[in-house]
Every structure is written in C-alpha cells, then in structure tokens.
Image (cartoon, rainbow, N blue to C red; front, side):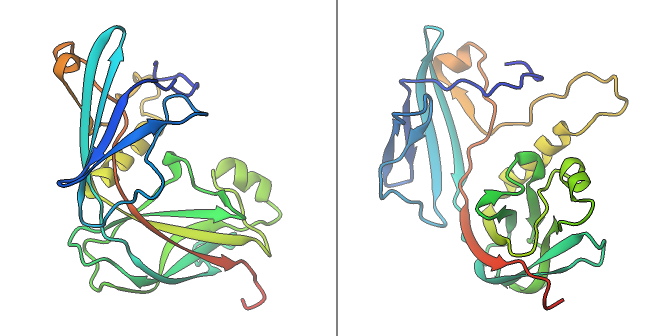
Length: 248
C-alpha cells in the first residue's frame, strides 16, 4: 500500500496466529465479522512481567510466509484517582492530574488517553501522549499533570478543527486510561508521530515507515518480505471524573 493511501489495509484470512509465553501457547481465531482480525478465546489474559511472542504463518501470493515478534507485558501503574483543573498555560486548557504510584520497573513509559462520554479524544496514534517515567524521583504520583485537554468555549470550533482534540464541556464524563508500555513501543510511537508531521523543506520525499519489531522468517525472509506496524503488550488502568467548573 502506498504512503499516501487513505484506505484501511485489507486483512488477510486463513492465517495461523498464536501468542506464546515460555510455558503456554494461545491459538487465535479469525473474527466471524471482520476479515483479518484474530482474537483469543474468552478468558485468555496476559500476566504482567511475562514476555509474549506473536507468530503468524500465512500464504501470500501463493508463497508461505512466517512472521514473529515479542513484547514484555509491563506491570501496571497503581491509579488511585484523577482530577481536572485549569491549566496555567492557557484559559481554554484543562490539565489532567494523576494520583497513584508508578510500577517498580526501572524503565517506565506511559500512554495517557482520554475519553469524553465514552468516545476517545486522543485515540489516533498521532495524538498519543507518551510519558517517560524512568527518571522519576519518586514512584508516588501526587497530582502530576499528565495530559492537557481543550475546554469548550466561544472558540471551541476552532480548537476542535485546529488542535485535533475534541473540547470537553460542563457535565461531560471524562475517563482517563493510563497504559504501561515498553520503551520499544514508546520509541515506535514517537518515530511514527515524527513521520506524520510535515517535512521541511516541503518538497522532501515521503518519509519511510517507522521501524517495525515484526521479523519475517522462512520463505518470506528469503523473498525479501518485510512487515509494517508493531506488536506490543501493555497493562491499562482507568479512572473517570465528571467535568465541572463549580469548584474553580
């Protein structure tokens, strides 16, 4: 698929897909409603601290291919609560304050996502908010700003078009989800976000794809096949708060 294609890539059916740890292998089944989407059986869940390996065997254009990638499942953050307060940066911004404790892992990276009345505000990869907590002085997080949201105002139409984030309004339910992610995935997101930005000078050629951790094997590797995207595991916690300015 070309770099400037807007269509969603078409899924591939009839692949053999497994996810394995050192002692267990889970076979995934293709969704009955969505081509190329593979799901684990009900009741399957990850265990924090373990490494998971994805393996895919599939025939493409008549040739058999094998693909593999691995990811650690990080320990989750302890998320006690979240709060919303006016941002000192601008009158139309609201800071999200996080209370909890970071996992004991030396390398701690977080992906902070917001949902307004159940709909993702920064759900696109270009809008992901990645925080590196590996150099934090304390594991305890006591009201640290982790994300800024737009607040609906007279210029909310301009904000929603120019800022990429949907503004929140009085009475909206705001859910904050904090996912503990690996350093490798954090770097992939940062690199992908760089590729999505405008290049300077403007007449530069299109950028290359962000580096994938998915490796081709067997006949696929012999034929020079490569993969895009990234396989990762992450642990998520979330808290919900009602947006109101009565206490401001």
